[in-house]
Amino acid sequence: MLVNFNSLPGLAATNGVEFPGLEPTLRLSFEEDESAPQSSFADLLKGAIGVVDNQHKKSLNMAVGLAAGVPYDTHQVMIESAKSEALIHMASQVTSRVAQSYQTLMNMQI
Image (cartoon, rainbow, N blue to C red; front, side, top):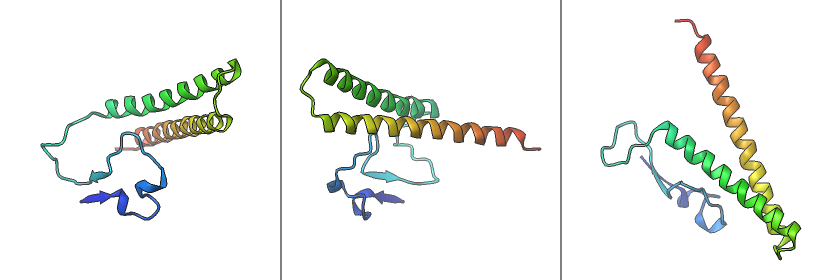
């Protein structure tokens, strides 16, 4: 099954929302596709943590630059800071949910 994000209301490419690492069309299937590149769960986590880390570094560099007198737009610095904060909060929530799920699985009786 193919999902085209451009055809979904509110997720069109014209609204300026970008999803890093997400292709415009995803293949959702329960069958293995031999032509699709295989990536491990560890690679997925490294990529997600890399996105959060890069956004945090970008936000921090802009804030330090603004304090040092670099002519950054104050609004853009605040937007980058808010993006960074949101990504860190989301990563923290995902980590908590994964740990909670693991705990639930380990407590199940076989």
